[in-house]
Every structure is written in structure tokens, then in C-alpha cells.
Image 1: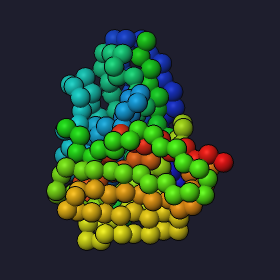
Image 2: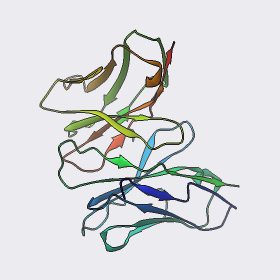
Image 3: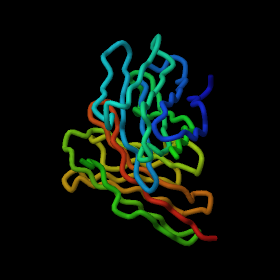
Amino acid sequence: GAGVSQSPSNKVTEKGKDVELRCDPISGHTALYWYRQSLGQGLEFLIYFQGNSAPDKSGLPSDRFSAERTGGSVSTLTIQRTQQEDSAVYLCASRRAGGENYGYTFGSGTRLTVV
Amino acid sequence: DQQVKQNSPSLSVQEGRISILNCDYTNSMFDYFLWYKKYPAEGPTFLISISSIKDKNEDGRFTVFLNKSAKHLSLHIVPSQPGDSAVYFCAASAYGNDMRFGAGTRLTVKP
């Protein structure tokens, strides 16, 4: 597609349930990133995929968070046993390798609310 | 460990005047700096960038200045327009790796 697509756009879940957030990057973009923005906070780095390399998971806040990227394209961020502090907007971004300005293209995000 | 800091959560300016948004960083390995603009319910969009080998980059009404010795960069918008009202994020990366973002500054341009 023309842009980065994220689904669902909104998700309300009960505390303790698992959720999956999906990201479809721009075709041909080899790098994919997940960030989250909690209320009143900046963008917090979560995880980074680059081609076939092992992902950089250094930003994942706990072992309840995991992410996959299948076939070098679509990525799924999974949060197990959700907690209220997981409520945030989860943003996915992709970029092509190299590039003139390292600029990322972001999706519109998934707003997760844990009640 | 906040490596990129935007110490002003909000800024209000009059239409036609200059908006100056500031950003400080701590990691001397950062070699690329970017500004993103974010409207409500949308993802951030790339605005302007600067490499560490430069101290200024200009694109229309937007100019980014980099002071490496002070580890400081700023975004100037001249003249400011009401449509510029948004949250502006400063970001930095080292050797093309993941970007680190500041907390953002909400700019309001009053007509």
C-alpha cells in the first residue's frame, strides 16, 4: 500500500487479556519499528526489525511484550496479560534501507485502552 | 534514560511571528537529527532533518539549526501559520539505527 497501515485503530481490552496489534509496512521497506506514546509522554522505542537480522528488543518494557515480523513484511506486537499501564497509542513505522534522510513513515497508530 | 529532551511541553505564538522549538540531546554518537510533526489521531510525519556535518538546513518556512558543541538543536518556523499548530517531536539516531524521540512540544499558533 501507499502508507503504513495499522490495525485495529482502537482496542479496548480487559486487564489480564492478551492483545495483538498489527502493522503493514510500506512495500519494500526493510526496517520496521514499534513505538508507543503514553498519555503526556514522548515516543518510547519498543523494538526494531531490520531485514533478516535479529531484532533489537532493547526497548520492550517487560517480558509480556513480544513482536514478530513474518516474511520481512507484516509485524505483530503482542502484549500478554495486559495491565492498565499498557494503555497507550502504539505506533509502527517503516523505512527503506539507506535513504537520503533516514526518515521514517509512521502509521496512524493503535490506541489501546486497558480497563 | 532520556537521550533526547524537549523541555518545553507547549509553546504559543501569534500568527506571522517566529516559532522556535528547542531540543537537547546527551548521546554524542547521534549523527542524524529529525523533526516530526504530529496532528491528533495521526502518526507523526517527517518535517525536516539535519546531518551532524551541517549546522543549518532550511526548507521553506522551516529551518533546523544544530549546535554540536552544546548538543542542542532548534526548529524555527517563520512565519508561523495556524495550520502549524501540532505537536513537534525532535528525534535523533546514531548511524541509521533506531531513533530516539523527545517528549514533544505542543505548538499553538493563534490567528
